[in-house]
Length: 383
Image (cartoon, rainbow, N blue to C red; front, side, top):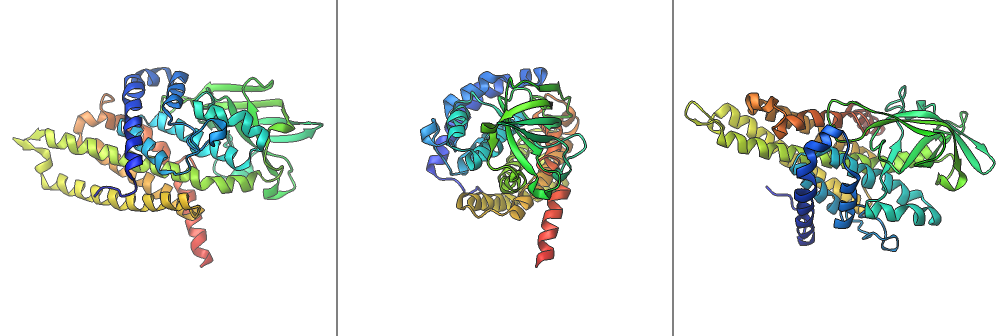
């Protein structure tokens, strides 16, 4: 069963994205893994191809495209070749950083920052997680204090996607220790700001081409013009933006599961044992039947969430369900894919092996799946 999410214009766009992936992604993936960084030239090429900053309004050089189905097309085509690190970096830019700017930036900030998101010249990061504060954002220690027309920022962040290449970083900081959830604010720190330094490029289990880093802020003087939104509203802003972030992760999980299933099905149709293709063995066939059914059922829910986001009705609870379910399924499909590839599934030249190490983080970032369950659980307690 094919998804009925897309229309003719989406399929035309898909051909453009597929051309970009074939020309600028597939030939470079091995080198990106080795250097643990996606070239900035790739971002520029993506901007020229019109697949970055889709939601940037036309007045700032973007297409002003608010139909999230186009982002799903991009996710699908990148997942199809197993470029998970690029998928994650693009999602951070478009589903997270750009989303915050579109929601909360004032006119001057929009003029300053939005054009680069459409051209690929501006790479953004969001700095929430700290060494001692993961999913519990209220426990962060990074702070900012007012000093005339500036805010002085101190603290550190870790596990920051695009932490090395980022041109601007949205920093979640505590501005009033006695104000509870209203004591947090968002600050945009630009590359080159004195006191802002980047730590080591973190050595991760997977997603090797994604430049994940530690960030440090030592008496960083952030001008008031770089405050994003209202002081004290940072936590509320996070709650408003997390549904799209989690939907993006869910879409990535879903498209990855679909791609790995296709790779696996093709492999077991070609691989023979005891004189016949291994796909003909009933035990293996039942596994594939279960996975195909689960993928299609999951796709129906993801599609529903995409439509809800387009309509402005996607809830935090439904986004949590999408993120939890799709990334759990992704893990199941990839684990089965490795098993069904046999020894070759453990060899890094096979995309299923790379998917195996790249996908594990999906159940952790954006809020662990245990936190997703807690969100769903709390919603059940209301009714």
